[in-house]
Length: 341
Image 1 (cartoon, rainbow, N blue to C red):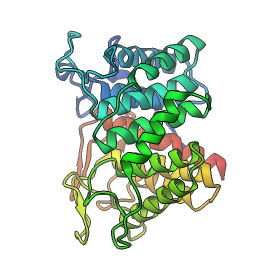
Image 2: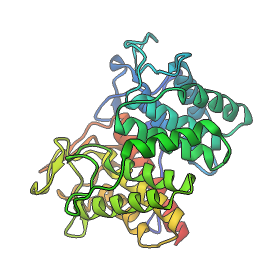
Image 3: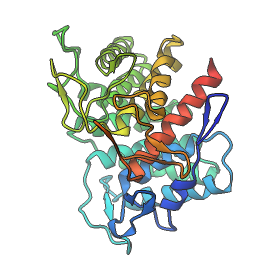
Image 4: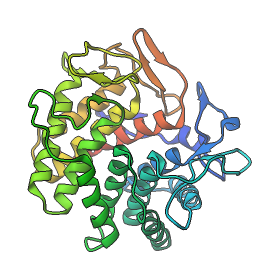
């Protein structure tokens, strides 16, 4: 990771090492890829979002984009459900379903249909989006991830019917504001990728012209940012979740939580033009730099890999795909925020 005057420049070296001709390896032992654990759609879809955000993709990023898009499209069944886990030999290990990986596939396809580097890739991504968008999930985060992809697609194709319908159904899945001012969150406990729920409502409100939903999403993000900030730095919800009145900080904190916060705050700024939302983006990148509950940097600048979890007295030194992509996504948004200010 290169810092130019404090502005991060993402290093994709470790992501390239985690990626072979078939897909993105899920796990690493420290910085060494572990092919025996195979691939998953979750990571390929996350990777597709990240590589499609690069403003000037070179040959390496273009290769990654083609690889991840192919993997995501191969995972989709004709009825719209998706496989998630593949062996290193190329066999799917699960039945197609509409869990989180389905929502993330739609997110990645929405990003690729909007911003992939060639017309052919954009066209294939749009076809895949339309197939997967036939389905709906009973899981809140699955719908939230799918909504983020729908919003990406609508940014370039504002009349896309499948995307608008998906946004409307995600808005309904999140529901109406809670009558309890002390706990406005739509669930009894915070769990994982929490800010993606708020972001989905923000982009749905914007995309559908629903000011009430937009305001609700912004209120949820304010609550989450306040709840997950302690002593001037992010202290995100740990693996075990966080309920009303739970003392903090909690561990094991996951990089995906921080990346979700950065993404939600970036969307809030883009839609409202209120500069205080950029603070959330900077807090997220500062967390990776070491301004966190354990004062530990959460990436390896030598490899370009992100560490897998923040512990009370250190961190998990493994540099898997999820954590590396979370770090890269946050670095991209921090770079964008610095250039915007």
